[in-house]
Amino acid sequence: MPALERKWWTLIAVCTATFMLLLDITVVNVALPDIQRSLHSSFSDLQWVIDAYSLTLAAFLLTAGVAGDMFGRRIVFAVGLGLFSVSSLVCGISSTALILNLARGAQGVGGAVMFATSLALIASAFQGRERGTAFGIYGAVIGGAVAVGPLIGGALTSGLGWRWIFFVNVPVGVVAIALTLTRVQESKEANDRRIDWIGFVSFSAALFMLVFALVRGNSNGWGSSMILGLLIGSAVLLGVFVIAEWRQSDPMLDLNLFRRPAVIGSSIVAVALSASIFALFLYITLYVQDDLGYGPFAAGVRFLPITMLSFIVAPFAGKLSVRIKSRYLLGSGLLMVAIGLFLMSHVHAASGWTVLLPGFVVTGIGIGTVNPVLASAAISVVPPQRSGMASGANNTFRQVGIATGIAGLGAVFQSQIQHKTLAGLGASPVGREVLAHGGAALKGAITGGAVRQVSAAIPSIPARNALLHAYQVAFASTFNHLMVIGVVVAALGSIGAFALVRERDFVPSYSPSDTTQEKPSVVAL
Image 1 (cartoon, rainbow, N blue to C red):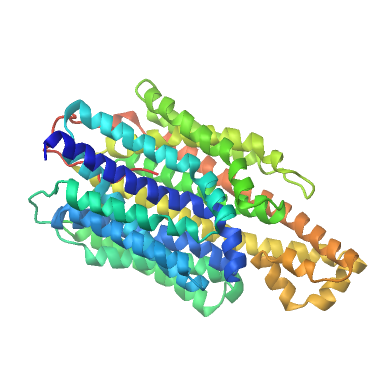
Image 2: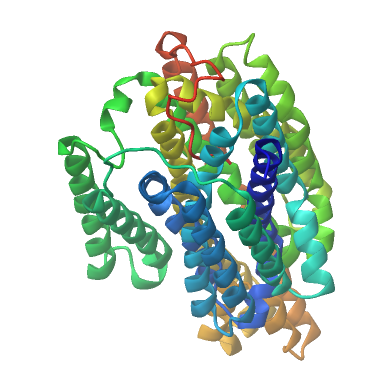
């Protein structure tokens, strides 16, 4: 087969797989309430639907890049596609929340393998200006998937059921695997790299223990031996990880990269963006669907202002990065995210979805400003030969931000929503009657998002209305507090960008036609 055809088949295979992968990240959000009702899952189970994926994606990204270098990127990419497709099938047929979350974790492993090898496959297939064109197409596919994800997810969930957001991956995955094995040329470089098992295990275990403690803290008690043990164990393992990476000759993460303040700054930006707006998408979805009562498709339509604006703004921000220093774009973009979240922190029990619209607009512009500049800055502040590791590390920090952000915000959400709903019910005679007959089941329904189902079973209309009103008031107040936390996180990230992403830390980039340098191995989401 002529080389000209083979390289474009490589781009098609990689873009097809990446579009599927990113759709599966964004479509899940609008399907969460339906998943919760179908599987009778708790709020913690909902958190794990996202966190299981983010955790394994963060844990395997850097290691998967090394595996691609060792065994060949094409075959490793195909393995990742296969694992992602099979785990998607298991997600779709899951009968319990536990099976779904375990399958989501397996999806994260497959996703990490695909991310860690996708850009390297494109970089090895294209040279010179064509490589820039290929990267541009790849970036457009990513932006498009993120932009239309909530709408497609809403349409599938409303029309066919939530299971189809996973089932559609299977035929797409089969086609992508066939293209990869028959039309993509193997990409492998002579090296003596080895998998850093100490770093991989210690980092993965530390992150899992931290997130598990945050998710279970309210139910088990923050002073309980289990939660304290998990937090202490996480800190100890993180220390083991740092020591192991510092002492090894070929570490999973080269800590010497962080001697440049700009590397620290870009990492802070990655965590702040993910731990603020991207982690808050779960709670915005719950507000729009559970509290306001919109279906999945209607919710997806209402998310279009934020997703489409981020998609439209991103190319302009990428072009501006040539003329405006990265620190100003990153800092300003995160500041806009903070302002947008602040605009969303004025929800009341009687509010409609349009109360979120100004915040959606400003936040969408902020996301679109940060994302392309962060992707470029992450590899521009290190020597070219370390660009692959720097890009992988930045994406790892993004996933860490999502996982810890959802878990931390969830701890606040569960604590406040229950306390405020019960307090609201206790303020009226009718509400106290609900409390007297509800008991522990009512507390579980509040934190589990099943208040509407419980209220429907109450024969007394005044009592039913009292419960719904108390819950809506509590949800609005708790939602506003979560937005304020997001404001603080995004603002701190903005400060970190302005203070640390110094232009003098940037290094000259290599020529696009130079194939001897290390290629970026993953792309920023």
